[in-house]
Amino acid sequence: MPDLKTISGLSAMIASRRTVAQLLALFDEFVEDCGAVASYAFAFAYGQYDEPALLAPIHCTFPESILKFYTDNAVMAVDPIARAALASSVPVKYSAMKKETDEVPLMKELLRQMAEHGIRDGLSMKTLSRPGRIIYISLGFPHSADEISEYDIRRLRSAMEIFVRHGASLPDNPVDQHIVKPLSDKEVEVMAQVARGASNKEIARSMNASVGAINNIVSRSFEKLNSSSRPQAAMTASRHGLIIGDKN
Image (cartoon, rainbow, N blue to C red; front, top):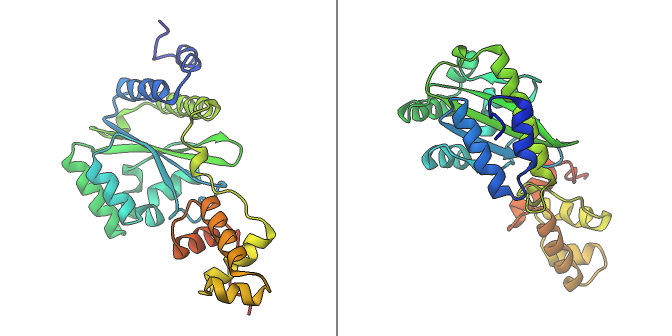
């Protein structure tokens, strides 16, 4: 069996995985082999990480309470570690961002909760599963990240890229379902009015269309935006640059 501690050996093992479940099992084994005690991966649609409040967790071994705190409080939107990692080509240590995290109450509480679970430091990084599709990965360690050599940090980064790219090639990959699909011109027009608070009846009247036709357009747009409500759909479309907002 190829050695997990070599990139070439790891690549061969990754390539042999035919399902996401098999790949994630190997991912967890690799993470543990590297000394990390927890990991998570989040997908971004359309490569939009300058407005990171909208994201989708695709794998997490952090305690459920920590994931819930992170997602329920939209911590990603104010997370200086994430912003630094998403803007960098190299992994970012949690501890290297202490000054910045101390200035954000939500981050101080998040790191406090992590420490309670034995997570003392970590590494966060940006990877691309394919052009324009960003996967944000974070690994939690029970010791200072300064104990990890620069060589091993580079190895981790290379390994994460191999994992996410192979994962994107699998037919059951969980990433594509989180990717927001583009809207047609008509859908953009309708969603812009939804964002302004117009009802379907009002939109139908302004566009000289039947209410039934507008209902269908709204439902189709919700599906493309992975949204279940008008506010969520409008926010999603706006954050991904699919609608501009009120032009009046």
